[in-house]
Length: 65
Image 1: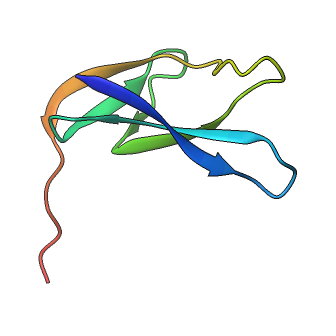
Image 2 (image 1 turned 135 degrees about the horizontal axis):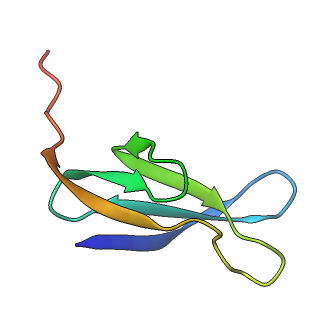
């Protein structure tokens, strides 16, 4: 399932939100078809995030040391 949570503020005071899959899958931004492991978006002046995401079937691989 896709989750969105408050992430913090940038240097200009704009609110940032993180979107990710709680099943550790990649997410795809619907408007651009770009795939991310997680995404950080800036909210507009009304607090809205102007992007939508869908979960892919592909799991994020863990980095090996």
